[in-house]
Every structure is written in structure tokens, then in C-alpha cells.
Length: 357
Image 1 (spheres, rainbow, N blue to C red):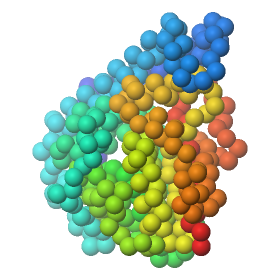
Image 2 (image 1 turned 135 degrees about the vertical axis):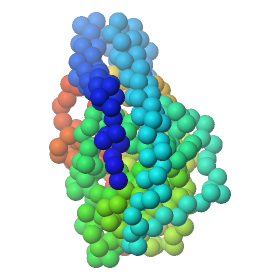
Image 3 (image 1 turned 30 degrees about the vertical axis):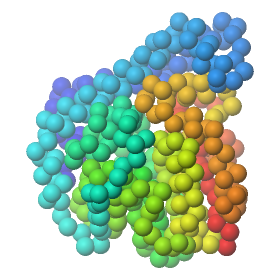
Image 4 (image 1 turned 180 degrees about the vertical axis):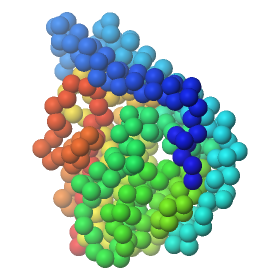
């Protein structure tokens, strides 16, 4: 299959480079300058909630806020334009990808998508992830830009697989929830070459793209369109349940239901690993994370931060439940906490727990 990057015109490549540079300077130049302004002002912030109010008193914060949101809009506009210009070729790829008898795709046209999922254009992607067969391509383009091209070749998700996931017995079953276009699922095949790997998502467009690309590479992955709160597998039949960047997109009730479903699926001794975000303890930095969520059409960040998932795991009967910091640049799982950084970054963290054997 031809990658969408291969289809960019010279003008589109230039636009992509501009947007990428804008995002980098927003994180490594504007944010530190804004933090310096706060320090010089003498303003004291004791909580993220207080920080959200006081941030707006800073001259640079309006620039910081605007650059993030306008950069996101520019990114999706470019991605949408590229995909629409190449729509015939891209749609044909989905239909004519080589067939791989080891993998599969199960779609459910009658699946009712939750209202909390359909009511918001998550990440500001026009039409979100589910609206038409091209949505998966648009999402793929945007996801690469958001990660500042650090996830090219699935580097980010390989780091998660290689540092945060445990060794498993032979012939295990692994379920990756909210797999999108397969960016989190494909590294699992390398990590567990003899496992049955299943990717689950609500959105058919991403699943179609994930399946076509897996087929083209001869990867054995089973993709299913299902609600991750109701996965059609038997109780105690899964060795590992993973999810990356999904719980913060759900209201609190759905977060709890998802973790309960993961528990139901796990065999005794099975494990969960959710790559998510957690507060850093720095009230100013954490306030900018809350504000990021508002600007990026992600209204449920607060629901995640307000949910005691450690206690939920304990109540369910999961042991060794804890959050562990994750550094996306090189180290991956980092039990000693996040490294000292001056740039703006996502406070990645892994929720890990084991079902009592």
C-alpha cells in the first residue's frame, strides 16, 4: 500500500513542515517563555484549578493557547485536503489490499456508537474518526503530526510494548482496545509473535485501514468493531488487555465499565496495561494539561483525573495496581518518575495491574 506521506505534493510537504515546526516551537519555546513569565510575576499557584484562573493573567498565555488550537486546525485542514484529493486511490487501497488468511476483520454495521463518542469531534478532527471511510486516513495523518513525527514506524508504541508490557506464556491472547488505525496493535505482533492479537475499536474506518495495512504486510491481527465495554469474548480468556490513550476520552462511568470489562476478560494471572495521563503534581503544568483538553475537544480529561482507578482495581480483585511514569522520547517506562523537562509534554503514565491467580 502507498503511504499517505508518499502522496503529498511539494506545497503540501511545505505546509506539513510549517505546522510541525509551529508545534515544536509552541512546546519548546513558547511554553518555557510563558513559565518564565509566571515565575517573574511572583504569582503563586497551589492547585491546577487555581492555575487555570491565574494562567489567563499572563501576557504569553493567549499566544500559547492560540498557537495550540490554530496549529491543530491547520493540521486537520491539511490532512483533510490531502485525503480528499487522493480519495479515489486511498479508497481503492482499502478494497484491493492483498488478502491474508491469518488475519481478519469483523465489522458491525448495527453497532450503536455512544453519544459521548459521537457528540464531539475528538481532537478537533472534522467528523471525528467514524464519519466515512476516509476518516481513518485523516486520523492517521494527524496522529503523526501530533506526535511530532516521533511515532513514525510506530516508535512510540514499540517503546510501550517493549518497556511496559510483560512477558507472556506461549500462545497467549492479547486484546488491544481502542486500536484506531492499528498504531498500537501492530507492535504487539512483534512483541508476541505466537500470540493471538485482537484489536477492538468503535470506528469502522480506522479498522478498515488497520486491516488493509496488516494484510499488505502479512501480519496476523484480528480486528473487530466492538464497544470496549462489551467485548464478545468469554470470561477469563485473555492474557493481556492493553489500551493506549483511550480512558481520557470517556466519561467516568464508561471508564469504570471499561476497566471492569478488562477484568472480566483476564485469565487468573493476566494483566492490564493502560497508557494514559496523570497529574504531575506541578499545579501550573497540570493546569495547562486541563486547558489543553478543553482546546483539543477532549472533555473527559477531568473525569479520568477524578477517577481513583487504583482503588477500582483493588475492589475488582486486581493486585499490584499502580501508575508508573512513561517517557515517550527514549526510556519508556520510568518507575522513578518523569524526567526534568522544560518543554510542554504529555504526562504519560501506565496503569498496570494483575488479576489474582
